[in-house]
Length: 120
Length: 333
Image: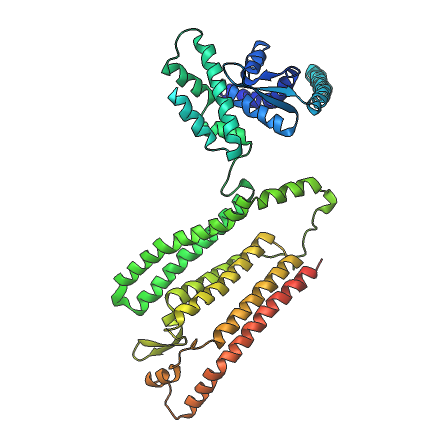
């Protein structure tokens, strides 16, 4: 049993790696700082570790998908991230791709029985 | 909160200078946010801080994520080649040191303890040096990013039609040949470096009684450097062949360049002052190999005087042929 769980954990880690990016981009039409994103995503059922999210935010910023700004007015200085123009366009395209993947995979998963019958 | 400072320092130390300040600031506000959520309105204890930092993971891992890439001394792309070359180098050097020890012990059984100490000394000094230079040779291009840039380029421009044809039998370079070549060069390096005094005419009178050396032992130290250079070039050449696996114009070109440099160095060396043993003929006569005034003496003297010229000619022909052979093989499709 624990062996299966180990496999599952590994595969889930790989699966999450890509989907987290979509989750992050989806929440950044309005400026957010890192930790508020962690809690927002957690509330919506997407678990992201801060140690993963923060480097990801910087990487997306470096790639030009996000803009950032330091807000030093509050008691605690925070870096806010927001989708850039490029980021918005890329996000829209990404959503289309994602829906395609979901559809294809659903199709594959749900028709599994038919194929097996056909082969047998 | 001192622990937080230490954590942030540990992470940012592993990052590029220009990123440090920004990441440190962001990390601090993150940790404070996490602490705040954890404790609510009560005071923050050391235990809370510890738990939050444990959640963030080790500084090394976090810094790795920030960097995006892992750092290597020898990256995975070239690790296999590195390991192969390292094995060849170390096995060769170790076996040759053993051979030197054996030769010395046979010649001088009484001094076996001294030879053994020599063996230990050369292992202790020689093996790490070989290890270091091999590693350095691979690590420097890695540090400069040579391997990565090339790989990315290949990935981007790759077309199946660009696949190289399977080389002709005659274009292929057999691994065994290159490895044998490296071992050959290494044997000579070791023999010349550690036991040049045995490089000469061996005299036997009721068993081994001494060597009349070819080389001038007083100036030998200086020349040894040149000799090591030439054989070092030979080893580089064989390594290039090993990596390439087949003859190409580029490889033949490198071979030509290395051979020309070797030839120039040899020419400078054998024509330089006092390379050969100046007392060779006298010592030979003293050892009783030839008698002064005899016909044999004249012949040997002639051979000795002309040898510089002929040795150079032979070496030159060998090196030139080596390069031409490379080009001929590279032409074969």
